[in-house]
Amino acid sequence: MFGLSLLVSGLAWWLGLYLLARDPRKPLLWFAGAGMIGYSAAVVVPHPVLLGVPALAWTGAILLLSRPELIRWWLVALPLIFVASWWVPWIVLVPLAVSTVLAIRKRVYFSLVGVMFGLSAAAFLLQLLPDAVTLPMIGFDLVVFGVLVAVTDAVEEGEAIRADMLRSLVIAGFTAVLFGSQVVLFGGPDLLAYTTVAAAIAVQVLANPLAAVVDRLAVPAVAAERAELRDAAESLPRRRALVTEDEAEFARLTRKALSHYGDLGKLVASPLIALTDEAPPLDRAAQLKRMLFVSIQRLKPADGDFGTSDEWRYYNALYFYYVKGIRPYSVRTKREDLDAEDRRALQWFVTQVPERTLHNWQNAAARLVAADLMAGVGSA
Image (cartoon, rainbow, N blue to C red; front, side, top):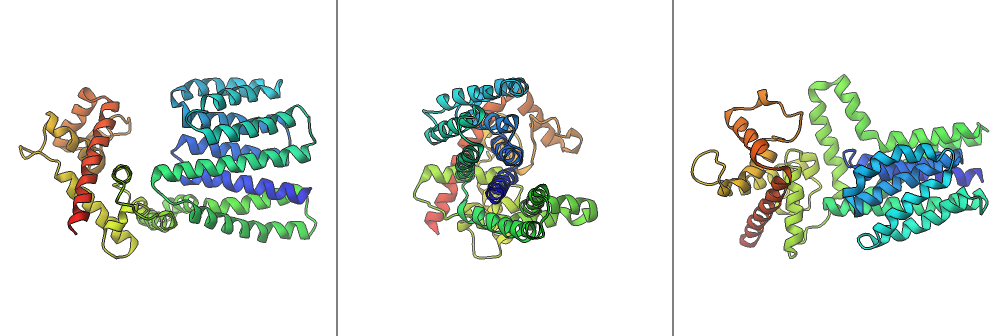
């Protein structure tokens, strides 16, 4: 039983960290990762409150996928329900059931797995079956859910997932076995085995962000360059083949590449790399960045350097936001670092362009850039 618990806990811990490490800025990955990590802890200490963590986190993830407009209400209710679960553990299943029903039309697969998880969690919380049966059942449901979230995120990013996930699992598994087996073979306490396996997995899965922190402290002068190289190496297994026949997908990939315009490490994973000449990965990413810049410049009207008329909106939406890096709705934007033209653009965005309108303009402009890139492919 201990061996199975150690395996299940380690697998859930790895998948939770893997989801968090994919992109710490995405709430969906945070919710899904927190659920996996909470389950990993529940395997070690099978307490109803700990098992409530994946149920609550899963609810948030399903709402983000199907009804994102409700997520703010869920964040308000989350701490209240968590506190209430100390006295009434099964209460965490109520919002999970509601979110699962709401997701049926938009996210059928997540709804089905939600039903499976809800039944397993109910069996555990209500003590309908032995813990030795219900905990592995819950673990299976959560792993399926975690993989679905990873696949969903990869599709959204235009990336491949299988090679990257398998690579991470193999390295983390090898390290966990290497160090965890020593504790088990020499008769160490169970808790030490759990923590050793968890630490070994964390060091491998979080190697990139940990290295970034160390670089900023030890070698700040080259920290950015080292981060770019690490991101490029991490991105290579995520690159998938480019299909140019699907215009809508090509436009979506162009939009995603534009969002990574200032990050060569991220551009390495873009399928649009196939449009560049054979070269080392970062050189090809730089080529792709140049291609995007040229296409953006073709959107610029001929009359002057900056304007606010309708013919300027697509160019402004891409050039100032991605090329110049101006974030008009962010409090971290520093006006003193901007030149006169950038300040004019920032003022115009803030006072005249709603955030949703800018997003729509960027989508439309991305389709024009995609068409320009496709024209280049056709003439090559």
